[in-house]
Amino acid sequence: MADQYKKGLVKTAEVFHFLAFEVINRHLLEENRKFFSLFQNQGA
Image (cartoon, rainbow, N blue to C red; front, side):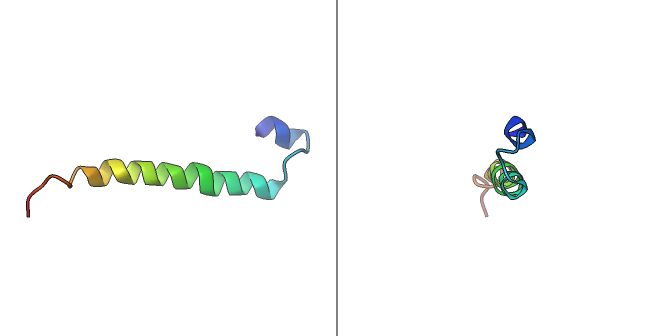
């Protein structure tokens, strides 16, 4: 994507969308799953 952006093939908004929704959102979801799975098997 960086190469395409440098060539003018990708708009700035598309880069921000990719960063915000794809990278950050997916990372948060993945890390949250790991974190909350630690508590799934604990009894109340």
